[in-house]
Image (cartoon, rainbow over all chains, first blue to last red; front, side):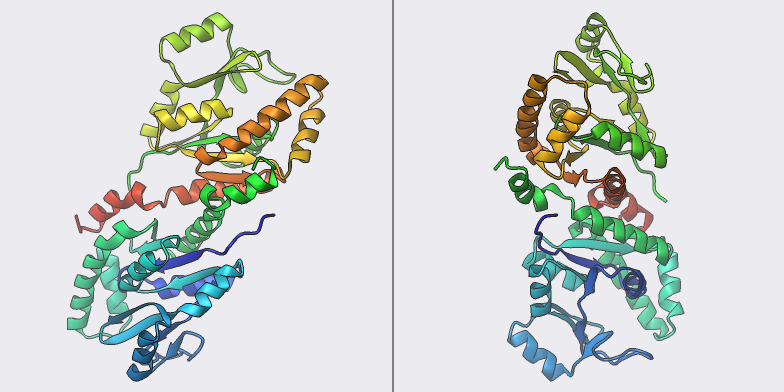
Length: 204
Length: 204
């Protein structure tokens, strides 16, 4: 009805909460969001494809992108770099298309500063016990790393305060539905549409 | 999952936009909202039932309620009083149940002041032409009143700035879906749930 810029949505949350699973499920059903693929220096896990799940980079390549300001956000996490290429995000939003990022909490804070109008969604586990089970269940980490990641997660949960929304990941399908409601509702926020509608209704 | 207070949602918008129709359609499908019935001194229209559509009051009765501070908001509109009994709203919200008000724009501004945490939704017509057709189509008003109401509507549309959301009433069913997304998403807003979730996850 009216010309509107896209919205940048950021899904983040503590380590092990299931951000990747929720993001994948969301993209299997919703075609109105563009997923922005992150760059990373971590090794691909089984089944992950370069250019689909991540852009897999060497440390040298990644540090070159940082120097050239080609990343909207980046972070070092468990010894690896993760970051979001900036051009794709800006071009997509300006074309009126929503962009959806799934990133770690340090990255989300950088987006908050660089794009104050971004909508930040914090994914939380139903309980700390459940989070521990998920970190163990992934089966890719040693006992010490599980302990470390649980401690990191507690610190990360305290960062909830910087977010716009909090969504519980009790079931992936339910978490997706909640995020879909947020994405839709944000398009009706008065501050985003007021000028266009007042013009349309000839009161400005 | 967590104990949460209800939210007060207020649907308003210019005269003739179809607030009542949207509200009725919404309540036919959604049972998680409590509709707060307004008190009014205007005469019942065909089919309207006292205690269901409105509490129909005499001017004396209504002015007594104003004096006794028993109204969350009230307004005089086209020679009649309209208002919202305050006790019902407060009790329902404190019991964890959402309340939904459908009121005129003057009343919505009073709610904004009395309940800053209320969520205000502004319903707009797809165009001014469409609004005029709807005012005429109702068939209950003279030509002069139609003109007056259209001028009033223009002034009312400028009051959009005080609202949280803007929803277009192009089709009743679509407007309802948009409002449902807003109602759901508001329950995930971080400022509403942060304290409870931090306690649940033992970081506070």
